[in-house]
Length: 99
View 1 (cartoon, rainbow, N blue to C red):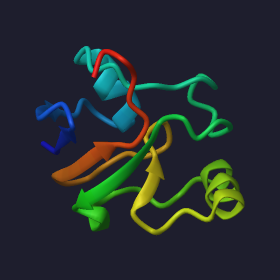
View 2: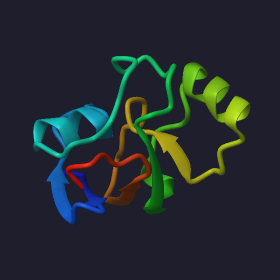
View 3: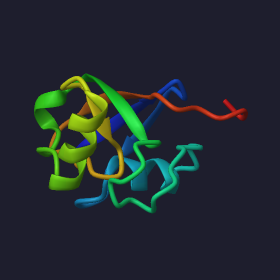
């Protein structure tokens, strides 16, 4: 079973089925910012994949459009679109006042 370590929260989450990193973060109470409802339109849920990029799903068409428009590096992904098949370490790039 795959897991994701989320920073700056220092939390380890076991992934359930084919859920996205955003869905898993929210399930575990991590205050992960998002605005478009997981449709790859806003980029607010973006993360930096620090380890395990090879275990991340390929970018969806919507994520690819956002990544090209905003000039994302390979490691910058949308949590609402990213699913994993192995252990990864990520860092939320948009944090709120609770953090």
